[in-house]
Amino acid sequence: MEKIFHYPLARIGIIGGGQLGKMMAQKAQKMGFHVTILTPDPDCPAAPVSDMVITGGFHDEEKISELVQQSDVTTIEIEHINTAILKDMASAGHRIYPSPDLLEMIKDKYQQKEMLKRHGIPTPAYHFVDSPGSLKKLGFPVVQKACRGGYDGKGVMVLRDERDIEKAIQAESFIEEYIPFEMELAVMVARSIQGDIRCYPVVAMEFDDRANICDLVTAPSGLDPALEKQARDIAVNTVKALDGVGIFGVEMFLSNGKILVNEIAPRPHNSGHYTIEACVTCQFEQHIRAITGLPLGAAELLCPAAMINLLGEEGYAGRPVIEGLERALSIPGLSFHLYGKDQTRPYRKMGHITVIDRERSKAIEKALEVKQFLKIKGEKQV
Ligand SMILES: Nc1ncnc2c1ncn2[C@@H]1O[C@H](COP(=O)(O)OP(=O)(O)OP(=O)(O)O)[C@@H](O)[C@H]1O
Ligand SMILES: [Mg+2]
Image: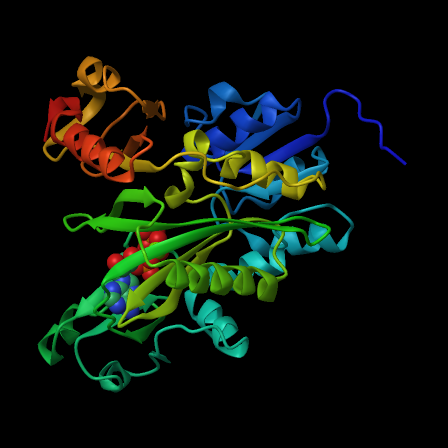
């Protein structure tokens, strides 16, 4: 029988209020959901577009309980949170997606690797660091990763040779085979409560070497269709192995014609921002549909796209000053996103642009042109 809905369709709680939370809240509200966010910073990007804000930290048991209790379904935009309290609340019958068990596993990168290995998903070789000597186990160069707390390349360290051991991360960590990849790829995959799956196109990611932050994302990836199929199959199998509900970003390396999974984001992902303009259903709406038990939307690419992150310029801080906006907006097919962070700092993710064009190469060309002149500077020089 066709279910009947009342307005608001449901109360959604989101842990985190950054740009991912903002775009998620906007799409949820568009569809008639009520949104409450939990954030330590009441001036965060998601606050102005949410119905309610609970101010509290991501480890604050009381505030997390309050959010979960007043929500029909709770989700996250960041995985570095108190999962223990979420596990208790899920056991008590509250709906939390992705599941707190899954979040707990993912937020520990070593546990994540163990899960990938258990399910036979290709991933670089790795070894737990339990003594200074074990840093040498895979030879050099090698990549050392903190088990917990890393993001945007923080918590990742390349040890070029034995002398770099003195720079090694001191927190609990593992080492991973250094992959001299030709390309970094990502695939967004959505899975609903009922187990339906939608797989987005494969995108190519390029990184800003200065900050190790994802810089240019292009869809389609431009790869050979057979390799694209392989990447999509691996991404779908990964999300099935996780039994995940919601949207997931599966980051991969292409090296020597082989695809290896780097890591999984259990939420919307920077590499999926292009879906807002270029896909039938964007990653944020898809996530909301998935966690509320609604039918998933189509994930097809409507038009090639290139996305560029707008990072705070080096040398500036304080209130953002945007240069080149009119010139950027005069480019046909360009969409400008500013997250509403009132303070910039070097390499902070302040916004992004997506350019769509019927020709992939033109989309990339325009996006790279914009990168040259569209700048987020600040009122203060640092
Ligand atoms: N095994 C590896 N070999 C070569 N380069 C690697 C390896 N692991 C990670 N890197 C590089 O470091 C980047 C950051 O690593 P990773 O994705 O694990 O960390 P992160 O802090 O979670 O990053 P993000 O938040 O940007 O996804 C990768 O995108 C890749 O460019
Ligand atoms: Mg990553």
